[in-house]
Length: 159
Image (tube, rainbow, N blue to C red; front, side):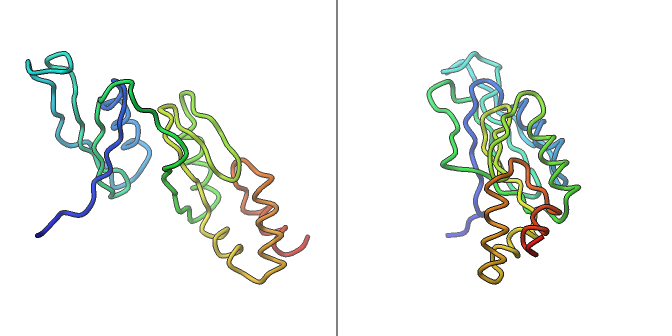
C-alpha cells in the first residue's frame, strides 16, 4: 500500500476558506489548493465550502467546514521552530492578529482557537544543556508569554 503521507484535517465552523488563506499568508512554501463545495445532497447549503486543501510551510492540510460540534483545544498544537527572535516576533504577532490569545511559555491560540507553540530553536538547545543552566532557562521560560531569546540566554548563563 502506498500513501502520500499524512494530511492534517482542521475542523471549522464556516471559516475553512478564510483560515486557509490566513495560514498561507503567514507561512512560506504555502498555497491554497482545491476547494470542494456542498452539493444538493447536503448537509451544508449547496454551493458553500465543504473543504479547502492547502499547504502551510510545506505541510498538507484540509480545512473542513464541519459545523459547531467540535472545537479546537490545547491537546493538539502546532510547534513552530524559529531560527531567531525576528521569526518568533513575526509568527507571534501574525498568529495573534485578529483576536488570538497569548498564553504562557510561547503558546498562543489564534483567532480560530488553534493552539501554536512559537519556539526559538535556541531554547531547545538550552534546556537540553547542563543541569543548572538548563534549569535556569526553563524557569525563565515559565515566566514568559512570548519567548525572548536574549532573556533566556541571560538566564542560561546565570546573569
